[in-house]
Image (cartoon, rainbow, N blue to C red; front, side, top):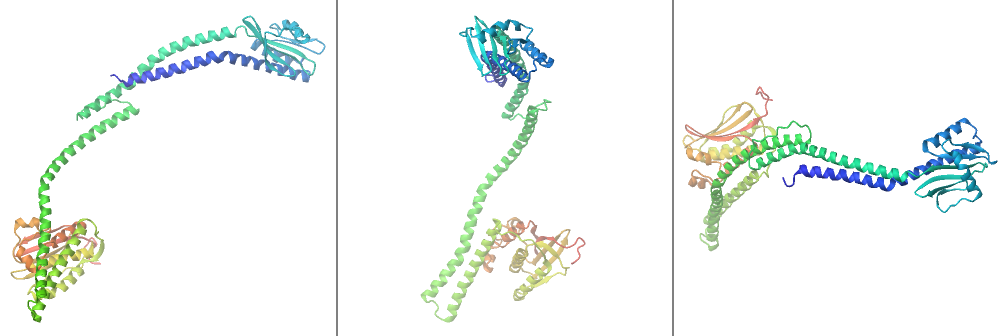
Length: 495
């Protein structure tokens, strides 16, 4: 693979490791000698402070001081010579301190050559300098304290450069070998890490071609293992989703096939609205023009013309109001307000209001005896549904001219039924009764002023309350029904 993650991973870590080692080596080369010199300077200065403290307390002869100074000199390769104000020796180190006596006299008497010396640190009591002699040299400190004590300490520097170069060379060899070994280890680790990643890449490539049989089978518990498990879940989810999409695609094809039918229904809806409005508008216009032209100047003719105009306007207004109500229901703008109420009383009151119309048309209107039922529903919408059923029963009642209303409890539902005697509805028309503007007998519907949207309103109301409704042809008539959720106790008793 041209851009292998294994190669990139190994290369990045090898370069990073090499860069860190090279940086450490450069720091080692540049600052080791300076650090060594600074450390020696600090050691000499601390030895000076010890001598100064002993001089101020006159504790040169104490065993503790002598042992402490000897330890410092031996540990740091420092030669020291200390004498009092009478030039008597107070301390001399065992590693060559006696050789410093003449050098101290030279400094004190002023005949020492300072041209090869470089002052490192200086104070009123001491001078610390670096003396060079060919390629070798030494770092020393000398001075006279306020107590009269004179001292000199020296440490050789002849091997510092050689030691630094030797240490740098050794570090370079070790770093080179470490880089090679580290690179091999990193390559092997990268190979181990990237192997499951390559496996996941193969799985994803097969998924691209909709092959979901490949599964990650590693047992790793790290991030790659989690990724593999998620890939397996993704594969299963994609397979299920594609299956659902294929099913949805089949549904979509059927929906597309229904598109022309839906468009036709839309055109038919507009045509029906136009037709329903055109007839009353034409009548209103015709009778209004008749009044305007003075046809029938007698009061009876004028009253007749005006009554026709008013009747047609009322029909138009009723149809528009029903269309508006239906539109609000279908688009969810009118939400059912669920409440607990006595549906038996509601139905009884509605029947009482319809008895006058029933007597006028010679219709027997009756309601079977039943207990008081309470339901959960929208009382206003419930009354609207019942009134539509009752109005429909009045208009199509024939034969014995009977309308019978029943209330029955079925499990946790209350079923309200409206039966009217008359001709049955053709079976092929039953599924379309709830469609807007559908009329089984258009001439008769027009005769009593129906708009063809009453049962559509029933459908919208019942669906907004998530309840069932329907129609049945019976032996001597037609029965419309709808159900509501019972709000009575389980035993069905009245409250």
